[in-house]
Image 1 (spheres, rainbow, N blue to C red):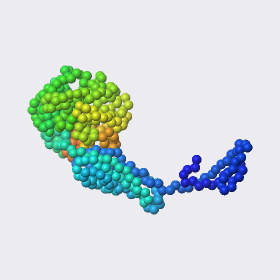
Image 2 (image 1 turned 45 degrees about the horizontal axis):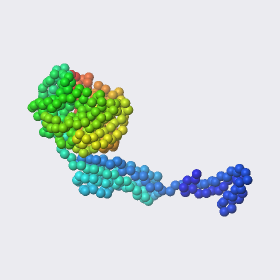
Image 3 (image 1 turned 90 degrees about the vertical axis):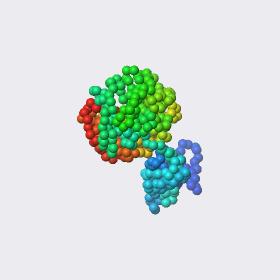
Image 4 (image 1 turned 30 degrees about the vertical axis):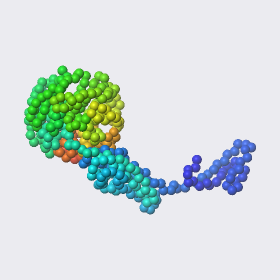
Length: 437
């Protein structure tokens, strides 16, 4: 089949009785073969192919990371190059681009709302464009699940595996400023995590009794354990898998997963009491809850799952006790384990930090709602170093990765700048019977 734009060159073969005026006349008295030959002319200039990228949701005052693509055929010969420009199509406020002519740039917004941005590319003859939508939400105060003294910096909580003693390290500028003993409890009580359940800006310590299923909360004021509450208990088939604010009211809630039937349960907390509880749904037992975080920047933490058979990842977007929708951002080989969920680029959306259990490499998914915006591989470390936590230890608005050396007890802090490690700090070490909680 001749392509569009080809020129007829002539007939060949013995099948034509006549070719007057370029027409092949065939008398079908016997089988005949006729070949028509065409000359393919060079294609003309085609418009550039432009893709502005997927829609993005951010929490102000963070910027949106734009990453458009443009492909072209190099025509016309003059100018022979393609130029691209970002512009605002609509939206309630002013949009400022770091560099409007760069395909990969950032955009800042003067006020909350829905914006449409356009990427236009021109080759001197054609100027096609592609649009994307930015949802800029007003952000509340940045929530740190492990800030014991409400100074905007993540702190480190330790427990001694031999005697049950609990110690806190108050951090500032990635260094330890103060340490203190919080107390100690019997070994059948295990720390499930930290979170601000009474909305005083200071992270509290969540415990569970592995024998009875009872939950306890240590209310904290810096390094002082001020009081204890016992909000309730649950069947031992239910395991606390995450502590986060799923209803956006500023208090941390408890997310439970039933390891037998796959059901999810949530306690919406109000200080020392359970305000409400519910069962948003269930998943097949090969799906496990691996953490919680605000993946779509709506100020409500979402539930992140992983399939232990296929390696697929799913996100349940939450509105309190309601599972509103599900996203499937992708998957990874099973040797990669999701270790932490936090905002490494400071744009208001939680990202996913992976650690390869065989070679020690780290991967980071920079999330944009239900999709992976970027993937980074910031490096790897020897296997005796394990990721034990995540939090903003230098108060720059970006969560950092906390490591502990299981052989020596040393602590390392990866200070993150998006998917890249900006610096590594070694605040101090301790004996190996102390474990970061």
